[in-house]
Image (cartoon, rainbow, N blue to C red; front, side, top):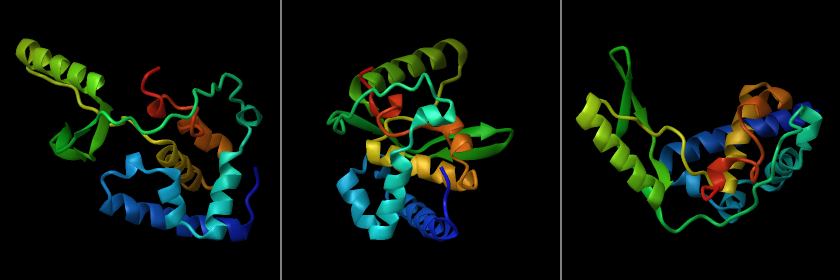
Length: 168
């Protein structure tokens, strides 16, 4: 997939919009396409749509599976104020969302780990709505300097990620 200089300029604007939205909205991973479209103008939506119709097989993703489109689960639990350390440097994990049964398992696992080995696990990447998966894909494409093949090594199209299909 090729991108014109004009599309790259539009893409930079989108990237900045998404970054600003991410700073102010901790519930962004739950965003719906209707709300995402309100953030973008017509040209920006056209560029995003161009990206979203990519044929994964053209980029070597022959195994890609379309899991489907599901609505945002109602039983999501927010995991807030989590941090981890790299050396002595604390890193804050942004709010993550887990389906309630997964959250309950996460809590049980952490309680057992703390009791038995004095350590716990953290969650750094959880549920993503289809629209948020589009944002993540777009951000990777931008960071990979518009190289779709490189971006698709990190993330995939909405509907093809288990982040948005938690019952799988």
